[in-house]
Length: 238
Length: 228
Image 1 (tube, each protein chain N blue to C red):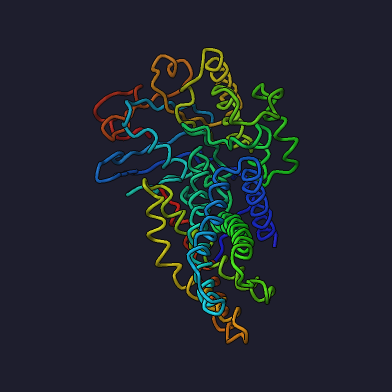
Image 2: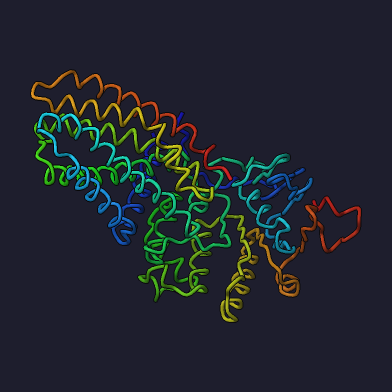
């Protein structure tokens, strides 16, 4: 039967925006995540550190419901994340790729995203989103012709166009120049003030210490809470 | 009712986005259409046969050319989404996977119709076989065959889009699965081109059944095929 999805606002609940229980994931026979558990409360800014290939992107794919884990589950506001189209209003995701259609203008990309979320008045919302990321003068420029930093801003504007309570970003600082990094740091701080739950991956320990309320590190499939790096806490960060 | 309207609206915007992208960056279209014309010209030049014999052959050759040129169109469909990382972002929107399948299917169906239009023109110019003697019936066969071809192609395109060397894999998987479509369409066209048309409707019915089965199947299983 054709499964239909419709706009469904995040529930007003005391449940944690993001919770993970016993998550294990193996790709091509290699264990990427091993029995990972995690609870992220509203307004937390969680940075996930780890070497290349440590499984950061895999963990984010599980958190966004894109990847079905071998064991365990991810819940958004206590609702199963996996394959629940209407629940996807709860999250905004910007990946390592900017995922913008190069043949569409910056504005058209955002209007398309607003339409996919079923938002009313997508043109006005797209203009507002562009203004918020400081790109209103580049609205009519094709996304493929924007600089990498500008593309990243549009990608983030697209990820949060529906004002999701959970925002997940995969290495958002990659390829950004000094101005872009400063803008993104300010933006992340602004989101924290709005009580939005933030999760992002990074390689920069000093920077995440400044921005995050919590630092986690993926190491050999285990998620370690860097505030409590004791052996007993190596697997459970809840 | 609201749910259905939301899905129809999402389908419209997905299709609008695909058509707008193709209009602005018609990558690969020149190659695809050139292939269609060259195939039609080559086939015609090799067939120095009496008109009656040629009629029997042209139907099969037309659909063979449509398969090769159409396969190029289907290959591009998902490659364009993947190359800029847009496919993953698309699957994260709160839209039912079946709606995404139907939008992609419609875009592919329209692409195949365009390829067929060029092939019909090329075959009409290069051969003296009148393909359009019964235009309404021939258009019906074209539409049904394209719907079956596009539904299988969209399913397999989604299935193979995450795999390297997917181009050759798509052709390998596509050929056996769409053989019933090519054979039925060729038979129906051959009977239609004859001086006294035979029972071409039975082959058209087979095309319709194939299209209904694969459109339904695709809508049901698309979400499982697009999992990482």
